[in-house]
Image (cartoon, rainbow over all chains, first blue to last red; front, top):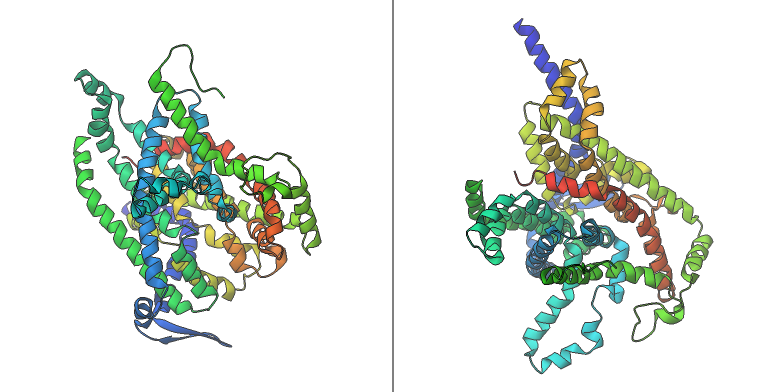
Amino acid sequence: MKKSKLSMRARYYIEGYSFISLWLIGFLLFMAIPLGRSLYYSFHKLQVSQHGLIASFVGGDHYRAAFTTDVNFLPLLKDTMVSMLTQVPLILIFSLFCAILLNRKLVGKTFFRGIFFLPVIIASGAILSKLMDQGAANLPIFYNENLYNKLNAFIPGDLLETLLQYAESLTLVMWDSGVQILIFLAGLQTISVTLYEAAKCDGATAWESFWKITFPMIMPMMLVNTLFSIVSSFTKADNQMMTHILNVVFKTNDFGYGSAMGWIYFVIIFLILGLVFLLFRKSLSTTEGRK
Amino acid sequence: MHKFNLRRIDFGGIALYVFLTLFGLLMLLPLVYMAVTAFKPTSELFLFPPRFFVVNPTLMNFRDLLLITGTSAVPFSRFIFNSVIVTGGIVLGGVVISAMAAYPLAKHNMPFKSAIFNMVVAALMFSPLVLQIPQYLLISRSGLMNTYWAMILPYLAAPMGMFLMTQFLRQLPEALLEAARIDGASEWKVFWVIVMPMLKPAIATFALFSFISAWNDPYPSMVYTTVQEMKTLPLAIQTISGGVGVVARVGTLAAASFLMIIPTLLVFVITQRMVLQTMAHSGLKE
């Protein structure tokens, strides 16, 4: 009796695994093994010969080279950091704002939601980035009207320049926030109406109920969105760091060094994500308690 | 446009619509710009200061596109065919494989289940960059270069699809599955007859995302193919723009990009409602 039960369970496991197996094979072949490989390559110098690749161990040389000899690496790293730091908060604020607007009762809701998601569809293409090079992404008003000189009379130059940079990246920010808007919308819809009603009965204004109800309740989504925005800003195709690594790998054929840079980059992303988790931990635990 | 509800004046509502319309227009800007550019004659393409709207629309750019592609060794329809095969393969295969993997992960109890799921979550954060080099070596060494397989296989085991579907499946009722099992359905049958139909919204979402990225990504075709006949549409279009007479082809490029977006728009329109549904139920909250 016991034996047959065991074999039942074994069959159940086998069935389960046979469903996963295809995915697992693909995952191992094209993600896990390449990942291990690239870590291995990053410690080796690779040379192409008739017998294929010859790897000779160089230790941490590539990692050292990235920080000491490569003139492009550190400035590019700084640039990607800065653009991430400026864009992610803007994306979060903008998408939360849009999500709140789109969550209200209005005619043509689906239509508007569709429009706000549209850039995700179009702008992810490499073709559009070509068009953006030709100026489609910058609002033409900023340079056409000679805005810089006009505003310079009121605002000091340094401040104005950063302000204009913000304004110029605004279109890009808006196009990047389609997915985040959807995630926020989903979050807003799970907040129960009774909370707002209770707050209203107690005489809370819309402003107060936003900060006391909406904001804390949306915190988990905020975390998801922050993570998502950071990852997507780091791995975007037009990211300069990515282009640099691709160039090193495919133009100069330096696999080892390219892998090392890829891993440095990856570790940095991971550290930042960890930091975000830490920052959100406290606010998340308070929301958990409220449920 | 139907913006204002005139029956009762509601200032908050009006402000809302004004805001949404403004933002919406900004969102539409790239699409409109591209469409407009595609119809501009050469004389208007290089006007200074640039003009946003077209005055004398023309189909010249589309004709040029046909001419350019007609002169190259490979007919343009071949690129379209390649793109359709590759994208179709990635979307269909990815959906089936991810759904099959998601089912036991969400509904079975078995060892290493959570380990596998954690691996998926971690994989979501990997930048594809670190993987590109070994993936390339793998493909080139296994002799898959210049085949459709090279462009399809690496993208089939998508962590994203798996994650979405597992999360979605988790909150579906167990009772249906139990009922089917008691009636003697095999796991395979349960999967196709019950799980797949229930997963529909998640499938639609994942299909949309994977379609967008597969359809627009020139990278696999750039790296894994060396012959002209195997290039896909996005790469072919990039080549059009980067040829010798780069300046003269801005209009042609716009025409080509305009044509490329149409299938994506169609897919979006079809899947749109289900996508919004999944996001609301994606279980991110609970």
